[in-house]
Image (cartoon, rainbow, N blue to C red):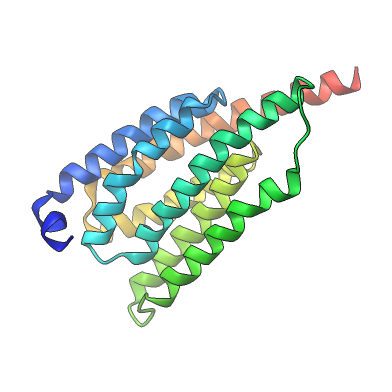
Length: 198
């Protein structure tokens, strides 16, 4: 594994992960399931990038994202079928299972992280914010977007420190896209609320 990690240029992992994330967000604005496919495609380069730098919380976050991705894709399908009246499903169990598994992975990665290094505390903040934002995204809650924006702000500081230049730049692009996504989702929520009242 160490030979594989050392043979891959970090700039290529950084850039390929960033490009797939950008594509994924274009689908997320419209709440299309293709978001999950593109988001999942970014996980391998990011996992390898973070593992090569011994950034275990961020590497573990990629594993959590994979679970969120598989879960979110299937959950959105179930919700669409529920909304068409085709089925009912155990919503509390479906909403809780991935969150519980993510907390377990997060706990393991925190346990192997050296918090005497001050920058690992910043890494911790990035991971916590992104876990919360990703959970809210699986539920299609509009408040997920401001949490993403906050994670981008903290992430920009961290990635600058780590010299991950594509990820650093990406945080500003993602924050701008998140402002747009927040506006689109809030408009959708208002329309849904108005339709429910009418």
